[in-house]
Length: 262
Image 1 (cartoon, rainbow, N blue to C red):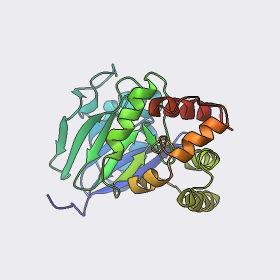
Image 2 (image 1 turned 180 degrees about the horizontal axis):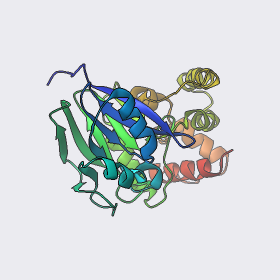
Image 3 (image 1 turned 30 degrees about the vertical axis):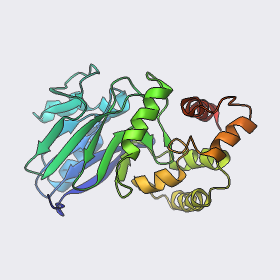
Image 4 (image 1 turned 90 degrees about the horizontal axis):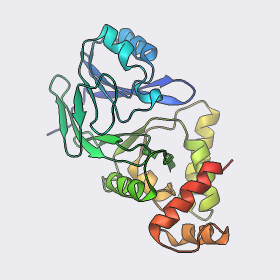
C-alpha cells in the first residue's frame, strides 16, 4: 500500500510533559492515549474534526484518564490492551491484531510490549513507518518497570528495535533531555550520543519538542537499546552495579540506576 500523504500526526501537549497523539486527515481523526479530554476536544474543534476512535496503550491515568469525558461527547469505539482492565474499552487487542480505519487510510498492527505495565501494547503503522509506543520506549530512554520484569522489557524493546530505522517513535512524554543526560553518563564516548545531546539541549532551550525521534537514532544513542554493548557493560562494572555480564542483568542494573539518577 502506498503512503497516504493526507494523513498527519499532531502532538497535543497535556499535563507537565505528556504528548497525546491525534492522527487525522482533513475529515477524520483518532486519538492515541488521551490522558486529558480537554486538549483533545480543543484540538478537534480548532480543526473542525470529529473523533472516530480512541486508542490506548496502557491503563495509567495520564494515558487513559480522558476516555470517559470524551465518550460523553463522542460515541466512538475504544481500543486498548486485552490484558488490562480499562473502563470504556470496547475492542480489546493483543499481539498481531490489526485495526483499520478506512476513512483515514490508517492500518495499525498491534504488538504486546509488557514491562512498564503488565499488558502494555504498541501500535505500528507499517505504511507510514510510525510507532505509537506509549511508555515502553522513550526518546533516549524507556519506561520504568512498574508491573513487568527486566526480561519482559528487553523482549518488548527487541520487538520495537526490529522495526526499520526510519520509523518515527511517537512516545508519550518529553523526557528526552533528562534521558540523554543519563545516557551520556553511561556511555560518554559515544559520539552520536554526544551530538544528539547537544542538539536536544539546544532544542529544549528554544522551547521545541524533541519527539518524535527515529528508531535509527534510538539504536545509536539509547542505552536501553544498547545495554549489551561492551562500553555500557564496562561502565556498569566500573560503578559497581554489575558483577555478571548477562544481558538481562545488565538491563536491570541500568534501569535501576536510571530510577535514582539525578
